[in-house]
Every structure is written in C-alpha cells, then in structure tokens.
Image (cartoon, rainbow, N blue to C red; front, side):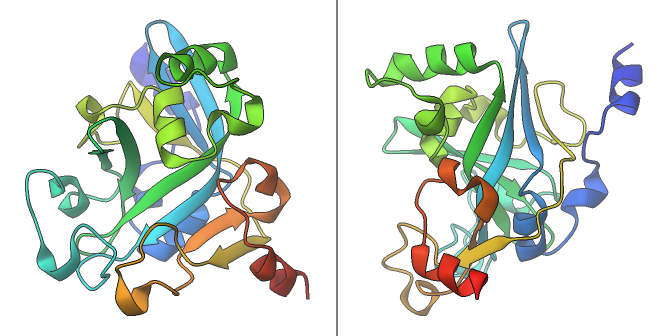
Length: 217
C-alpha cells in the first residue's frame, strides 16, 4: 500500500536532486516540503533557499574538504537531508546536491497544511504570537514548525516515509542576493547565492529590495 502511495504521488525522485547546487536551490523554490509524523501531514511551499557550493565555498561547512560525522550528509548522495543544530537549541535543514560537499539550506516556507500543528510545535520554543507569516520565515523557525530534528539527519528524501519533497510550480521571477549570516566568508560574502520567489516574498526571512528592483527593470 505504501509503495502504491509513492507511485501515485508527485514526490521528487533522486534525479531531481542530482544537479548543481545553484540549480537545485532554484528548482526547490515552489516545491512542497512534506513532513509525516504522529498521524499528521504537514506541508509548505519552499520560498527561500541558499546554495552552499561545497569544498570551495568559504561559507560552507565542507569548505576545504572539511569532513566530520556532523557534516557527513553533505558528502552523501544528492537528496540527503543534512540537519544540524545551532547554539545547541535550534536546527537547520539542508539538502545535498551534486558536487562534493554541496548542499542547499531551506530558509523559508509558506505554510500550506497542518498549520495548527505547526503553531503548536513553535509555541513550545517561542511564546510569541505565531502568525502564518512568521511561522516558517527562517531556517530555525521552519525546523521547529515541521519538527525537523537531528534524528532526520542523513535521511534519503527520495524514499523516506517521514520527510520528502513534492513537485510544485516552477518559479520564473527569482531574486538572487547575498546569503545571510556569513560575515566571515571573505570574498564569498557578496556572492548572490540566496534565492527567493518574488511573488511569495511576504513569507521570506528577509527581503533584498535593491535586488528586487534590479529584477523588475
């Protein structure tokens, strides 16, 4: 029965992930993040991503060929979940792509299904009012909302029963701008490796109005 469900779904296969990091970062925009847990299914449209290009990228955990148990997922087959914790409290969710040590960070999601469940998950770690806009507009926020934890690290998204990506509507108007929080990455700081969809910019973590104006010209 499970195999039949997969066959009928529009789940992204391993070939979808087996592309360059930048290509995957853009292809994921408009795709749907799905989390199945405790009898509930949560869904959200991916609206913001960042590409980390692997061993040459000074902002990547894999820069210089750095490889440990913590970041091993970055070197695994494309479509592998790389989940790591920041400050020992929150998690960030990445997906490996083609290219040694390359992965895409999922920065923001527009909630679609299971919003009550997401709000409940968020309220455990935050007392702030969980509006739809603020529910998943940041990498740690979306991990809390979707309950993406380190136990999902190294999960193959092409065949997992707990977390996967479904095909969505390809996005045409994509803003390319510098990544966030990488001040020490030297010449990589200003590279346009953060991407978000202009029509869903309401849900992203931070808008780059200058780049939006350039896109509109």
